[in-house]
Amino acid sequence: MRAMSFPKYPAYKDSGVEWLGSVPSHWDVKPVKHLVSCNDEVLPENTISSVELRYIEISDVTEIEGVRNVQNLVFGEAPSRARRKVHEGDIIVSTVRTYLKAIAQIDARLADAIVSTGFAVLRPTDDIDSSFLAYFARSPYFLETIVAYSVGVSYPAINASDILDIKLPFPPLAEQRAIAAFLDAATARIDALVAKQQALIATLQEKRRALISHVVTKGLDPAAPMRDSGVPWLGAVPAHWEVKPIKYLVEMESGGTPDKSNLEYWDGTVPWASAKDLKIDLLRDTEDHISQFAIDSGAASLVAEESVIIVVRGMILVHTLPVSINLVPLAINQDLKALHPGDSLLARFLAWVLRGLSDAFLARTDTAGHGTKALRTDDWNDIELGVPSLEEQRSITDYIERETVCLDTLIAKAQAFIVLSREHRTALIAAAVTGQIDVRGWAAGALASV
Image (spheres, rainbow, N blue to C red):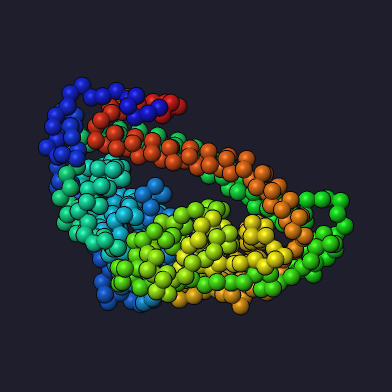
């Protein structure tokens, strides 16, 4: 059920806050600072270095999942920002990189944790329910206000005092609890539906991967004579296939980043690919662009169309090897490599082989600077591939592209369902905590239609 299907309150009044609009007539509107204390406790600097900590960083928290990771450290090895103490019921709100929307309620499991000084720790007074405050903190009104008040482009931040000045719609305590109870049940139901779709996506993606892996190593003819390839990740291959190291099948091209201080190099019309662009199989454009001047001056070079582009550095390599084919000439950054197949190999077949054998490549990743993952050329260019004739490569490629269309359609539908469900979740929270819907009669009732 959409949020607008719930009843409204009998009467409303102007909240006095432009972004908030009207609120139920019996609600108050108060600055957050009148209902919480902030950053009450810190670890002293003379804490014994061997004391064990459960530490929560900004990147460990998301708006939807809350705290999704806890790091086990000792004080002597913990970062200097690992200082704020939290208690059960506290709300942590990121004051740096505010676009990440790192907000969570501290439950009993995390009551002894230490969080980064990049969080403001809000401790509710007796006048406000912790869960109600947590839902309010996840509402678009609160999040958009924080982003609007943040300062900085690449690393936006907000002062905790500015968070405390944000005005909060404030119903009576019993009503706060009723709203929170309703949202607990409603969001749990939505989250369960999302989890089922995520499981379906994982199953479909595994089926897709298995299909690709099988046909690029075994071919399409189940009756074809097989032989041992002598390569663990290939196993038996059709007897008429060749088996060659990838370094003898392709030429490799590296990329780079033009000087960002030279504005003449940027915001042009030439696509410039980085890892974030390689989320699709066929690449027609990129998020960032450089100028033709950057190409003409030698600050970057163009990769010919129909090249196979892979990510060779980045944390994505922990679990995924992104592979795309560029349908237009473009430049690439230093985290990517372009592979140009020789005469015996089709680009699209190579792309499917790389996707099908991604585990063999990922097993060879190394750790580069700042802890990121790297796929160094010397570690993977001797990986051997099964190479059928060009005609058979075309048949295999056509088969994979036909078969994956159905799987990709199902995956896309599941992903769209997740997006809509999360939008509904956000809208429901926003409407309930700002009094745009009256859920008092629903809090203890059935939620089958929510």
